[in-house]
Image 1 (tube, rainbow, N blue to C red):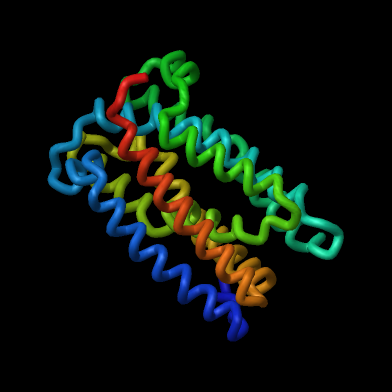
Image 2 (cartoon, rainbow, N blue to C red):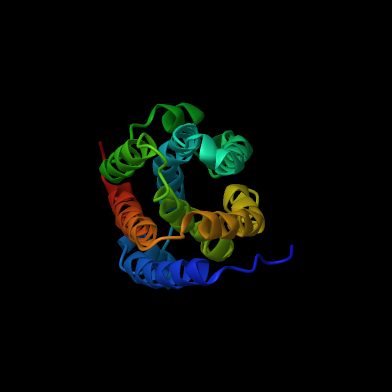
Length: 228
């Protein structure tokens, strides 16, 4: 796909979001579960626990994105249409994640009945609150973090997980799917950044929400190993 050429305001916003992303990468590097994956000390049980905790965030993703779309007023009808399309594309991704969990040895009822961990509760509550505000331009920052994770990290994580657990790709399909498809989602996100980041106040709001989302996403991963 041809990359979208950003306006000067869009480029400024993108540069600010890239700085948030680099800090997010550093935060991810301090998550104990991911440190063990990097060192090759990650087990299949660790992976199942990760998927079990991830499922709720994946399910809730299409909900806050849909609410976000509905909160844009008529002047933003193009934005609303793009965001609705994104929610439609991802609203059943959790089913792929469930299949990976079962293929890795997990019990389907366990993942379907697991409660949200503390980090997921915080992340979902924040995103749903912001999505209910009029014209929630700032949620472009949240999409930047979450879609960027799929684009930049998912394939590498899937490859490392298969390597250290002896997998053949049969239970890392969810990650691999997002590694392959989130590049297309990011191209659409660049267009939204250009459309919605035209004033300093918008840039400030987008970057702040990206930072909050990044921190809460890491909290979600930090809480994976806790029992609730």
